[in-house]
Image (cartoon, rainbow, N blue to C red; front, top):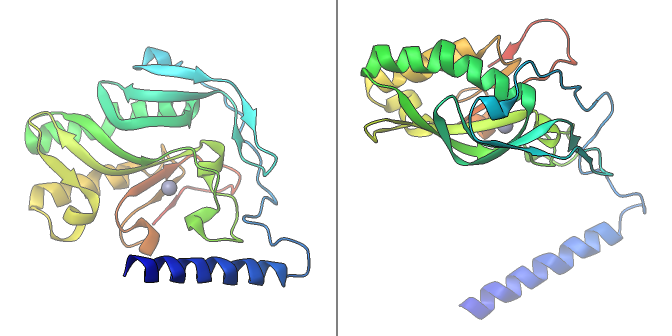
Length: 218
Ligand SMILES: [Zn+2]
């Protein structure tokens, strides 16, 4: 069985190589970068004053990805991350604002306790939007976005975006809806369950500002 699977895999690889060899010689871009500019960071607060964070040297990738004034962030305002997030300083600052203004007050009101950690499932990632080849470069490719799939309360209870958004306990549904709707504004793009299939299991928060106009929240 294993051998058969390996053979199928090898066949798929050969077929993929054949397809790319058959192209016109111009590689289809993995993502588009027209109109995409690495955001200028104008941090009002150093993420190191918000929690454990390490500065990351500015970097650019020939493909168009990169980040300026990014940090590897382990926790913000007393909330630890399930994995370190590589994000721009402004995104860390906005997370702190959201945590203080919305996440913790809502958690205290609904659960009588605070949130202890975020389940971070993505931060910097050099890829197209929604992982679709040929789409525009994702804000993740500029360390300008973070994906959060769940929240853990101080008593260890977990609030899971995918599980609880539609069919979780009423307090979880209320909490998730409140913090998502109040993220819209401080964050310029807020996506989650119901937006599209890619966002069924997490909240995507970013600071995309090039579009102009108001925030985009779905
Ligand atoms: Zn995302």
